[in-house]
Image 1: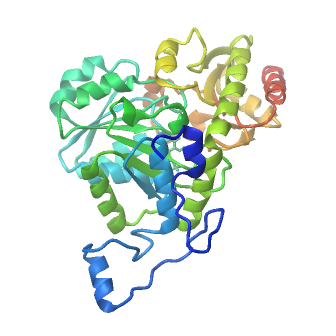
Image 2: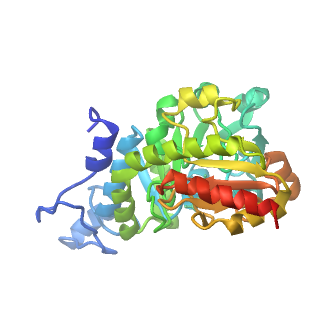
Image 3: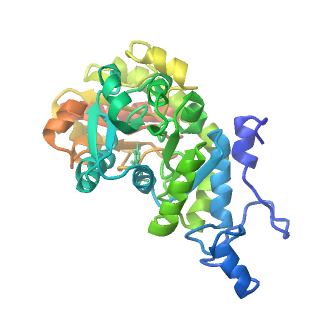
Length: 395
Ligand SMILES: Cc1ncc(COP(=O)(O)O)c(C=O)c1O
């Protein structure tokens, strides 16, 4: 499938038809598999031969999803996980050991910050945070100390970009230093970090890959067989793997991913430009606005500008909450990447477990509202926001 276009691969890659000649993909709803004999079981367990033995290790439905996502990311290996967070945890615990140093960009998803600050530290793995748009001052430290550099580009919720190729030139100067990119915001439809020199991509398939808010899942994608083996070994033993039912759902989600991303990005551009001229909005964080300081990088690094954006409303938290409560189409929910447009107040939800000082440094203020544009008519979404913005100032 390597010579085929992205949409063709999204629909066709990864399917392994059974002898029943089914057209759509089946779900292998089984926890274990039958062995031909005691010897066959032993050979499988000792990895002398390949095959299915237990669904925590391998499952044909999960494999189909993994192969399709790997194809879209131009990768050799993909391992599915129980959630996006377990994908991040699995990479960290597969690659890092006590005493190692991690560098990460500021403005990451709240639980990722929590994992780095409050869980990895218990295993003596320390993280240094750096501004996403200015990693240059950390170059020497990364060259000398980093075992892993973790970035989210664009970041959630402030849509800050990191120049992946530039950072990859730095991390690739040492063989044992890995550049890991959280590609949730863009998906492989808009950005393929491995092509730009990254070592590992992590996904929360809970987001755009599913696209309909039905399940929680994640994946790790890489061309590095050493990392792939370590991650597979960790998951097989520690257990946060994806269920076959969820794998089937995400596999089917990938079929419509390119077309959904195109539609949502187009509507998001219109919404961002509309918000940008609104008198009660002081700032819009969206890389597709020409005056955004990273517009040039976004145009070079991504195929489009994405569906998620944040904006600052005048009047701080009170106005932000009133606006959110006044909306009738946008769903108030912590998820994004859904066919249904969503709205979130990051400071009091997704980023509430981060200290106020850290939030301040990240730019997650009390007046910040995050929206993710789904597949509704864009004019209806703009009318909804227009009503909400007027209402939130006039109580
Ligand atoms: C950028 C990003 N990465 C990772 C995650 C974690 O994914 P999950 O909720 O599937 O564990 C999220 C969840 O919102 C996210 O926004």
